[in-house]
Image 1 (tube, one colour):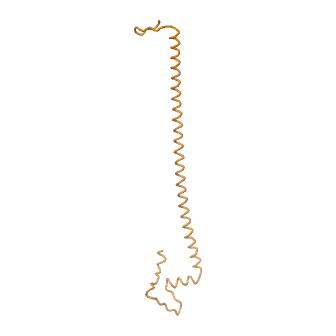
Image 2 (cartoon, one colour):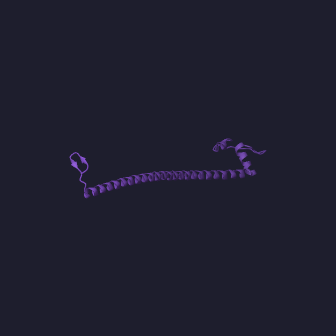
Image 3 (cartoon, one colour):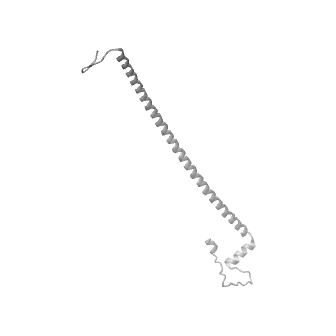
Length: 136
């Protein structure tokens, strides 16, 4: 009976020694368990941060990929439109190389006549103005 806390005395026998050893071992196990829990939570937290960061990157990449696909589609439509316009313009150039077509345009638009010809205009047919095609 060595230590005293007020009027309570501690017995010094095998049971109390074993009990103290068990309690100190339980305390050590509890501390170790708490440390392991803290480590596990820390590792899970760090892993979660990495997963979230990679998920954000993946989502951003998919959004950028979708935007690029939309831009590609728009540009392909513009290209097809420009290709059609180019085809029409090439056809017009080919027609302008034909003398009879050019003569017809000059006669219709600019009211040119050959020597000795007379031009008649009908009231229900309005003549084309010289600047009509330029406005188109």
